[in-house]
Amino acid sequence: MKKKEVVVLIGAGLIGLAIARRISVGKHLVIADYSQKNIDNVRELLENSGYETSGMVTDISSKESIKNLVKFAQEKGEVKNLIQAAGVSPSQASIQRILEVDLYGTAVILEEFGNIIKEGGSGVVISSQSGHRLPALTEKEDRELATASVDELLNLDVVKNIKDTLHAYQISKRGNSLRVKAEANHWTERGARINTISPGIIMTPLAKDELTGERAEFYQNMLANIPAGRVGIADEIAELADLLMSDRGSFITGSDFLIDGGATASYFYGKLQPKK
Image 1: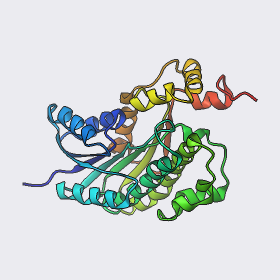
Image 2 (image 1 turned 90 degrees about the horizontal axis):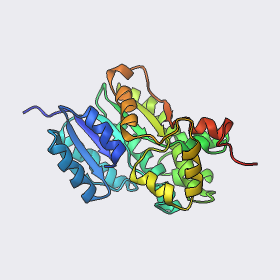
Image 3 (image 1 turned 30 degrees about the vertical axis):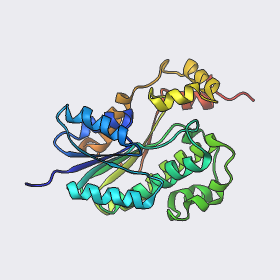
Image 4 (image 1 turned 135 degrees about the vertical axis):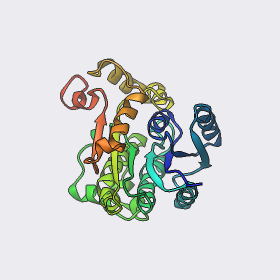
């Protein structure tokens, strides 16, 4: 029997799941997550809905674990689509863990899957509005985040001088969008595309942690004054991802899409501007 095209979902959360449901019909969906329980729950839901799935526990802070995931996915068929939706938030992890997972792990994923992605394939990385609120970096710092070898990434000066977990998260998410811009050129050599989506407050367990965590006042204020007047939902991110990953988005690669209900615009020019 001919092997199906493969979609790889890394991070079995609500946003990744919403995207996977849209683009995995008729394909084999590989679900990777740090938690076997998360994998089992998502597989059961999707299998009961008619999807074909398999799963593999993966720690994206480990290059070896990511390489093993690539091999596992290739055993199922040719990898056509990648959804990198794994990550940890400022309220969930230490500075080092955030950098290892969100920054380093994503960089390795982009490189390793960029080496094997099928011609005509596409991918999305779920980043964050936080990367857009990071104070301006120098041109040198931006270029290093985009192009430094993955083995040197965590040794960069801009990564070493981290103040707190929020700063680590912002650097990581800024790094994600920059890395995608650089890696898009690598993916293009294989006839494939890759883009970043930077969501704002999307109601997920991760968002709930932030809304009730140590920066709860900041996020509650953002929610109260966000121009859109509400939080977002995972399906709204999935609608954008579906466009970017389909033939309708064939002219779009190496780009970052901010979808945050106007929060970042308000942060710089509206009610959410930081107090002087």
